[in-house]
Structure formats: structure tokens, C-alpha cells
Length: 223
Ligand code: FES
Ligand code: FES
Image (cartoon, rainbow, N blue to C red; front, side, top):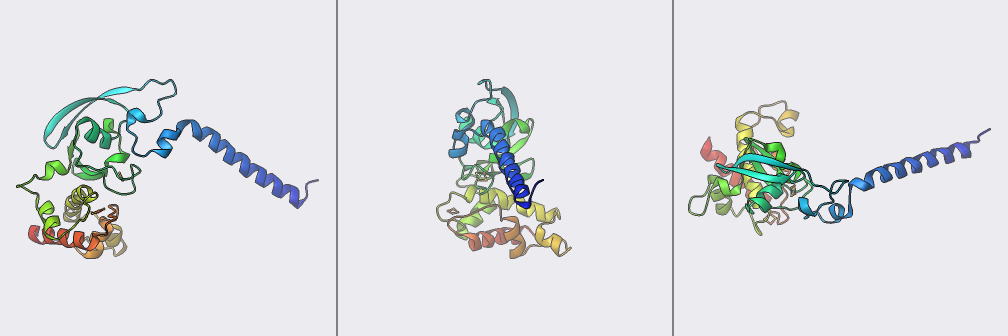
């Protein structure tokens, strides 16, 4: 007959056994290159089990120009933009959906391009920082970031600006955030609302208050 100690051992054995099973079934799909090098492009990541990449053709529009690319299906939208179209304004920070540096606007909605496979955007329309404005003809949000010193090193800035442009559209469309949803209220422009909506865009330089000033400035001119 089993005593309490035996039962405890059985539970522990089960737990360790389960952990080992998870590890054994997970390891083949999370190769060391992917685990240790977030900067790796699709071609540098571990190959499929038989070693053959699966290729696909993608046709989409980027900043108003049509492109057709032949891509490894594992290619992220971020790598397609940076490595295949040489649009390096969009930045790779974490490559794990944690920093927002890779934010672009796809079919009117902001998106972390490091978390999205390029082939998912067949027929889509992508806007990157290069498509918002250019030197001498800045988008109002770009000009406001300059005016309010909404950056220091600038690495997060393309993602911040793309996100900020989409945020104002979200508020205009009445799409709730956690702040407005908690208050059961229509979204309105406030520092709390903007900080909540921009919370997916991290700035290591801590330019947050100036970023809110820049967005508020543009929103005031648009209203
Ligand atoms: S690079 Fe995409 S969220 Fe950090
Ligand atoms: S300006 Fe340096 S990370 Fe934001």
C-alpha cells in the first residue's frame, strides 16, 4: 500500500516526467540559432526537418508601390521589408514582439512586423516610415516628433511614429483601449489614453512625455 511519501514521489515523478516530455518534444523545433540569435533572418534559422525551405510568391503593395517577392515561407514581414526590399527604416529591436520597433501599418492597422509572416499579407497594403513622409515633406507626426524632441537615439522612432499615426485613427474610429473600456466610455484624447495605446512601443531613451506631447499636438490640429 502507498504511503503519503510514495504519493508525493509519484507526483514529483509525474511532474519531472511531463517536463522532460515537453522538453523532448519542443527542442527539435527551437534550434539553437533561433533561440540565441534574435537577429537571425529566415535563411539563417534552422531549416525544416527535411532541410528544404518552402518557397512562396508574395505580391503586395508597400508605400504605394507593387512588389512581387519569392520568399521562404518562414520570412517575417520585417525581414521581407528590410532584407528583400531594403526598407531599413523599420527597425528590428527584439524580434519577439516585445519592443514595437518594427511597427508598420498594414491595411490601416498597426502591426508588429516581426511577429507576422510576410506570406500572410498577399494582396495587402503596407505603409512603413518611408511611406509616411520624406525629408522636406514630413508627415505631420514626423514633424511633431522633431518639434517636441520625441526621440534621442531614434532607434524606436519609426515604430513610435507609425504607431502614433494609427493610434489617432483608432481613437477617431471609437475603438476602445483598456483605459476607455474600463471607464465604459468613448475613447478620448488624454495622456492616459495615449500612454495606454502606445504602451507596446518601448523607448529605452525614455522620451515618453515628449512623444505624448507630439501626438497631442497633431491630434489638436486634426480635430
Ligand atoms: S522587433 Fe518587433 S516587437 Fe521588437
Ligand atoms: S529614442 Fe532611443 S530608444 Fe527611443
